[in-house]
Length: 330
Image (cartoon, rainbow, N blue to C red):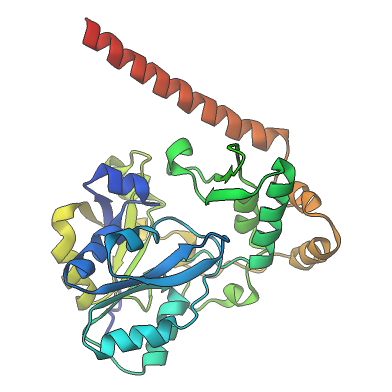
């Protein structure tokens, strides 16, 4: 039974490498480590070699690590619910992570409570159409005349946690960064219709624990904000509270105020944009380059801003390295 109001925490993993590999503060790694330590399994979303988002099951850290990071497309569940039930019925501990609608769907499928099930749902902005992602991917490959080898939906390493830049790495060895998909995503035109009426856009969620990037940390706990990532953690019931207590030794944490943590997806669904129908007509009739320019913010200003940030970070790293060399010789 979930509480009427969650307890709210700002969380950072104590291990810097774990936090660097995570999209926000590394809370998912801490929680899933606990389940794996107890001999359990973890279900979560990964990006395949074909750049589809799918749910898989992992019984070790290597498989779980594939679940880290953002995937701004809807995951394919396949037989996940059926397999979760099999694990639960033989008494194995299960952590299932996904969007709130996926967690609620799993619980309805199971039809009863399981003491060995632990659910973590994410604060979801909305789920974009896979058609847009596929078209964008193909367009990038055409531009670079090379297949995409790897994608980082939010490149925290080069641009910091606060920024949102997608980076494509190509088989040719080249890479490119932009905010095109980010702009389409936050423009809300590419979200599926049900997202505009999402019943989970509130502080109430079906998971035992709800996690997200802690947008608003500069108000809730400014001392936590080092631009390397902070997790927002909503503890929704006693199960979530018990598991969080078990992993607190791995974390730097602080209980915060709910009113300072209410990012837009915790208040209400995003309204359907007035130009959504026009966008989809254009998408069906125009090349993707037109979509990128008209709706994705492509252009000299956008690309130059990304490029300059990347150059500044490279210069900063070189200066720091140079300073360290000097200090050793003095």
